[in-house]
Image (cartoon, rainbow, N blue to C red; front, side, top):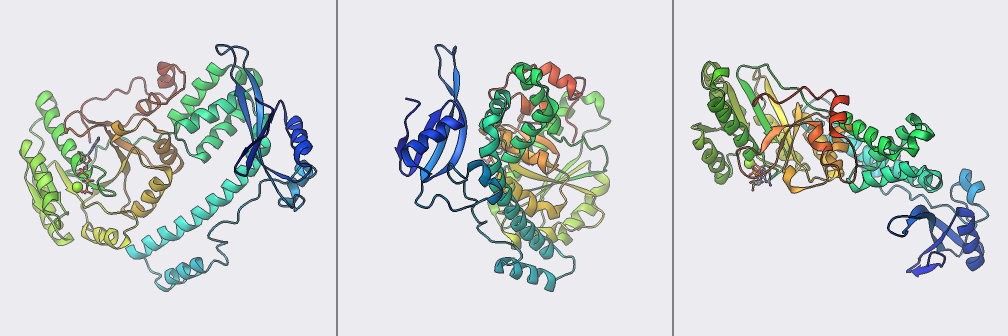
Length: 444
Ligand SMILES: Nc1nc2c(ncn2[C@@H]2O[C@H](COP(=O)(O)OP(=O)(O)OP(=O)(O)O)[C@@H](O)[C@H]2O)c(=O)[nH]1
Ligand SMILES: [Mg+2]
């Protein structure tokens, strides 16, 4: 069962104890007319998990012109057996010659100056360049992985698979595996429990968490983000929790917190109504503001008699540059000392999350709120992006109800939801210095 080449469209597999054996099997069947597509080490099931053996699974294609060199410096390793996986030309071309690149660059240069439209154009440009860079590094990673993972220590391969199951980005997975190779001795790698413990500690350490803000009188809190992520609901949750915290811990307060709510989502009647419905429950008025002049007026009249001013905004697609720029203008009020939070759902893909960060970057958001954490069980995607883009997370939300479904973000909350890892939570907590930092009330 593990020795035969199986035809599956044009992609074929052969398995064997090592690469040499696989390649000689392929040569026996096809001569030199083949191209290796990938090499994967797998585990042959044993009796109740015992006597497991690993084997190599080589994926290949039969080609009519096998000797065509693709990656000259790699040829020595594979030349006589077949050709290497062929790097695909990046779909959008090299930026130095790509017409789309030239066009975007010219528009940008023509409009040079610093206004929001340019900021968004720069975001588009950055996206394009990052995509290109990513395509190139994916190509390189595929080529390198084909040659390196077959010799990888079993613990590293197992962690690589676990990270993938948890949705971590390819670059995050590669970084962790690289660190394992450089930080662990062979004996340490042989101790899989030790390895898992340390890797979870690294993951916990990599999650940037925003500190609780203490400044600001009043605190002006603005939520921005794509459509339907839960901005309005999250503002209602924040307001409701301040009210509940006051009710439960009156000794902490000299007077009841004074809360105001403003919505800039004036086009949709339902949007203001939705916020009003929540606000009524905690006895808070909601004002509408269609432009920055109105926000300024409201801010000036509330500044001296409020503790919190919450500003809700319309959700826009991260690619709707026009409306995002408009919202920027509406929120442009001097001396408001606002804290802007980007709101994103936990189920977002790595690529979309990066795109959202890029296109909302111009709001200079302080931190990120991850909503709908109850709707997914895979948190590697958000951890990867928060860590790689160095964007701190401040809050998470976990349900549609307004009460008790918002809490401050804590790395332990995320790592305790990792699938398949065996580790001691208390030791991780000690390691990241979280053990004695317990939530004391609802501070925004
Ligand atoms: N499961 C779950 N649903 C949530 C959570 N937060 C909000 N929702 C739901 O998400 C939906 C959209 O919430 P809104 O608060 O209207 O989202 P929004 O970002 O203000 O939407 P727009 O203003 O249209 O951009 C509603 O059905 C909420 O009940 C959460 O933490 N978990
Ligand atoms: Mg809303």
